[in-house]
Length: 477
Image 1 (cartoon, rainbow, N blue to C red):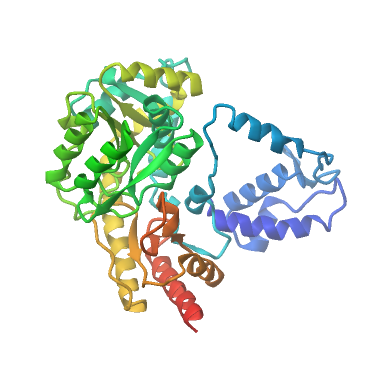
Image 2 (image 1 turned 90 degrees about the vertical axis):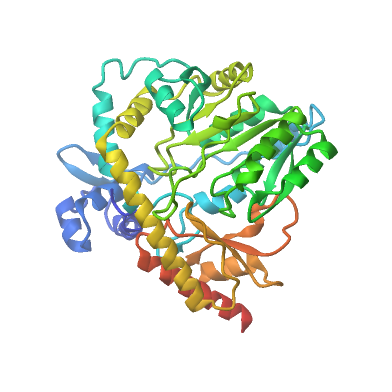
């Protein structure tokens, strides 16, 4: 796979070069471009594809690349101001205020400009992804008998069985294959809560959960956490005060705090929800992104609940590639039928070739090797980040260290304007995530979430912290 920054840089240079050619004139060959710019043929091909998509270049098989006969088409200007009234009327029709705001999610999804060290991302860098194993799995999957047939709406049977074994305590019939963790989460919210209803969430929590809840007209209600995860005494109070019927939690390496739910609180969370007549959505996103020193992990909450309280969500995406959108949701009782119906209405099913590729991947010897490699890399990168923070920013409170997840949750000195710091950091060439994106209400203190999986190699992590230190110096001076 070409490096995205190299492709972007070459495309930027070639945009200016293309302007020197007449419409229809042939551009230099790929071999010439490789030699001129000292990049790989794959990078040249990717840059040409990008310019073709922008309408600047056309390609002819066997002939080469040419400047497009005319520039990119520009749509005629129109007046769309009427939509402000139409959209407002539609959203307010049932009396429940809604907003669809993905800005907090874009902090971890957006690709920073070229030259910026990314300490804000939420996915493995391409260097850590099992690209060869994925390519081989896709190739084998495409040759499977029936690989391109319509799959069962609930998912391919063998993949459901694999997820059931991974989750523990459930049967394949209680598992639905989903297009990743986010669709499973949004489907669960829609299945379990009505518009206008309160939903209890950990505070702080994953911004994608907050965005989805608000988009469906739900009211996220924060339940504070400490080093042992959600405070169960306050969870019981929140159920009584709000009448909520759903609590969403991440018991393992919680995002963003990386906390693990304390052993004595695991059964307590399920008991409190059961007494409130409520569901617990267990977002088990981090089980496969453990570090080499993690030791034995606790079982899923679902494996210890037999009364249908826990609805479990898992995904392969975090430990493989952001484009392997394959996950699962598991539940017991009548709610399974509702979850299946929502998925059918939303997307019919997950494409069968993708499910077959996931099966090929997890059934291959490369799967266990990849998990071991990632575990070692995550531990090493975590230590690089922690060492850099201690060296460059010794006045900061040391972050809690957890043997899992992709990041550390850094408490900032009181009075720090985290948004100003994030903006200053970007000016210095490092992207970080401000902590306020993770709180459903006013943050009790300033934080940064610092990722150690987005940079290409460990040296970039240390350089990113160095640039962050310069940002702090610029604000202090």
